[in-house]
Amino acid sequence: MLKQRIITAAWLAPLVLAGLFGLDGGAFALFTALIVLLGTWEWANLAGVTRQGPRLQIVAGMALVMVVMWLSGAALAVWPLWLAAAGWLVNLYWVTQYPQASQQWQATSRRLLMGLWVLLPCWVGFNVLRDSGAIWLLFVLLLVWTADIGAYFAGRRWGKRKLAPRVSPGKSWEGVFGGLFATSLLALAFAFWQSLGVVGGAALVVITALVTLISVLGDLLESMLKRYRNIKDSSQLLPGHGGVLDRIDSLTAAIPLFALFYIQVLVDVLAQGSPV
Image (cartoon, rainbow, N blue to C red):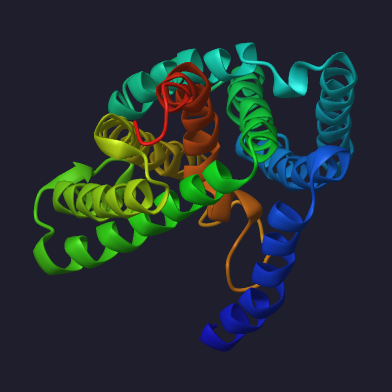
């Protein structure tokens, strides 16, 4: 298993990084759309659609929505990000109330709708951040990776209080705090590197803490759906790593919400001058 994970990571990581930072405009939108469409294929299964024909129809429908949004300019609009903010508040309620509230979303149609407000704004968030010049896309990717690393080591060393035992028994509050500590250091280092000044740095630290918590929710949401479907991985598309959603579950929450914070807060803060 370890050998297969290493082999997959060896070709996948360079490909993803080249696509995320070597492409822009329509090419970048197409590249990230392909990632999201693979996630849509897996989400259809999480929603209870197991036959290939209907799942392909769902993927085609998502692709059509993306094409319309790109042609209309909505792929860089702020309203899908607000949709994500509202949707993730609903997701938070469902995760914290699992399994009591599962009857509210267990219908296949409702789980598919859930996927729409999870996956589509994620694609928009990718485009918004890449359009900003890629530096903030880099930051949010580092944020999610740093949060995972911090949570892993803190959870292993100090983890005692379970975060959401009915959804993901392995996660602890100590792991969350470890992730928050690690990403706060990342935000401070990034603020210094970008010469954001005191106000800009403070804003980035606060936004980073919020997005770190949101990224944990993204992980928990997929865990909840997999637990409900009684499956270990979202698919086997990535040998040794499970599915695409298993790799981007935290990003589906972090990307659109960070993009929203970027548009609504950081742009105005940074516009006040440098250093801020």
